[in-house]
Length: 254
Length: 174
Image 1: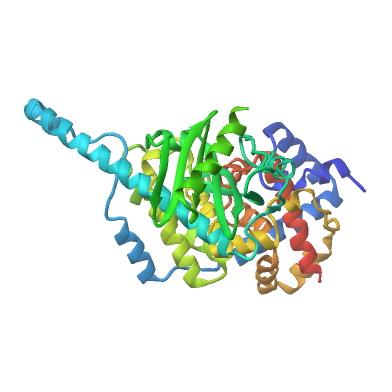
Image 2: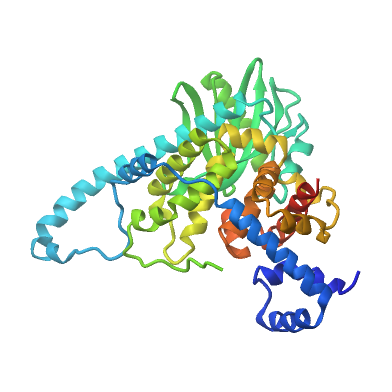
């Protein structure tokens, strides 16, 4: 191929992604090489066509209004006018402390409920799909390596030979924009989700450890171990959830 | 290229997020290819972003942050699950490369000026290819922004983008 080394960088050049010295070199080359100039022209045409074709869908005005109205609560970042509070600082401090404790408690509860709702949604949506897992295997030595390079951490899975649980497989999932592992286990006819995320995901809520609780009719147990946050969720009994939690805890600490 | 840069700290969520509304909607429609699902996806994205606004780091790229939320929301939606199961987002990293791009598809394109053919060809791409092509060409994001929006390394952005362009050219050649 003519000018092979130039052509391999042609897209980066046209995307403006080459360092400035290389851009200048490329400019000079394209001016003197008809083959690369023709290729660049064709690709620019292609870029323009994609750009024109891609700007295609516009929202309805009514939909835009609806979303805008839903943003009625406007959290403001940074500087706020606290100056007016100075004269009443003492009284306000007492009030703020009292309200703050209540607010933080409520905010945590709201956030916690939101996270559990999302996990329950993930659990249900995954089981409802025609192929709930991306790596289909009951072998932990197949499932665990599948996650390598896909999520920013690794984890251990328990040996299940002497238990009633079986591993069906796993998939990548996201919670609060954080990638994690979603594993599906089977117990009798029930399917159970095990979510594993970096422990940072639970730190703001302070719910690193939660014994088996009933959330949205599912039994659930969460804990943090070795820098990871685990959540087991399923429609099995509380004892079954706890048994699986213990298996995972043992394998994580071994 | 459009660079969103850093945002002033006093901006409210609405002031930052609403100017992106049309673009996010367009991107969401290309992902779902259905109006009702697009509206659900955009609405959920804005609700999630508003709830998580306190965790947004001022000075980082707000646009990439919003696209990342939209894309992650899509991936866990029913349509997203179906799309990614049909063609895994990662399967195309190591898959066979389509034939190299020759001038033929571009020449066909120039001759016919057929943007509808381009739209159909984009629609026909797997989600992973479609989204990266749109972020680069339509949203005019830098490779770094795309890496942030898709939570993938820069190297993967370049290889996935190159592959998406080749696949599009292949479809236009048909």
